[in-house]
Length: 621
Image (tube, rainbow, N blue to C red; front, side, top):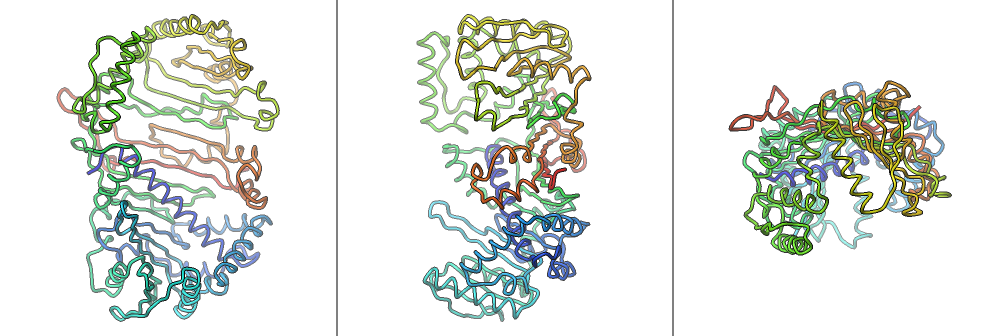
């Protein structure tokens, strides 16, 4: 199959596809509005005909690479949620202005009146598929289907659209027949359309159009929808969904290899033993004025890493936190070595990269930053690169990261950014330091050893940069160590970075105020982010099991900016300001246990799937 890096890259691709799918649904829904009517009659009608999710998958070829689906008539209570969202949006004059302008622009560009010519027949289901791709020649075969409620209205709209295409692209369409369906194909062969009683079908290739029509006519049973891998992926999607995306890694492997090579510059992406990721699926749903997106992929990697579940990190963060990420990790370097031995350096670096790295190693050796370490070869295990980095840091700083620092850590990391006043920072950047905090957990009984290691780090920093230090009482068991940077750079005025060890965490802060606020929350004082209603509204829909948790207050960020900063019109900016809340996200993968000979994932029913979930709240209080 594909490598881990390809999996991560594919997740990025599918996230973009999901975003495009969601935007497409929103645009279609907006276009169906009638003035001040909160819920268009067309959607109520469409609801009565709404089919099961991914209904059109039965019409796409079995080897479809990417399939995206959306509906304007979702079930499981989502339609009622849409009603509430539409009613709230419709109260906004700015939103109505944006909708009217979009309709006017569409009609001016195409000559098609969206309300009269489109909403009379469209819906409720939409889908699009990537059937083939040739990156070298930039050729893509794409097909799509749009639900039809009124064939006569759809036919009039289609011919209006073809008139526009002929004028705009200087092409002409010919009419042919296939399996009893009339098909219209452009003379350059790059556009093909067909209209059935229930579907408007389009494709960038005539053969692809015919392939779908064959299944619509019931003359071919083999399809994406009948494929076991698709059924497996579909079974892992959330029940509440109005959009979904399925990526068949098996079919798209060659394309992903090419994309990975282009992005990472690697000539070879080799799969590790047991690294089988055959599909990635995503769903988007609506619940209580919040959009929930979930990405799932099978776990087929038996790594020796031990990653614990994440605790309730928000209890350590101030209620006005602008954003944070929290995660668990395995600080055991030996287990990382064993995991990296599954790969060779040549799997992730090109020969040119290896040559440049060896030149850097030689330069560091000449400067006394490295001992007599040998250069790296393409067939060396990847753990050799880790050891080289540790040795270089040790030679340069005199600190053994593995023995002096990592061996004492507990495997939990929190990075947070406090409230930021953009206007004040623009006017007086010197006096407006941003409160940032990094918290790393440490093992019981390791506070003294970790304190000694941090003392060595600060001591070397003092000797190298000549900075002064203060020891401050911030409410912890021991005093915090704070650096005075005023004498170094005018841009650092207001920043007094430091650290403190308290209650199982090594906390590094950008200011002494940030350190004091964190310790206060650790001691049970102050108002924590866990008391923030909007954060809890988003986080409440995340799965309880997590190894990663993230949060960003988009509403506050938008209000700190203006329409020019975001390159939006005033009405568009106003819509964002009124409707966008916060986003919270989490991910979880099954644990892997360290056995004497092999490393076996502890999988329970349904647990052998990696999941990423994101929740965006709408209309914040």
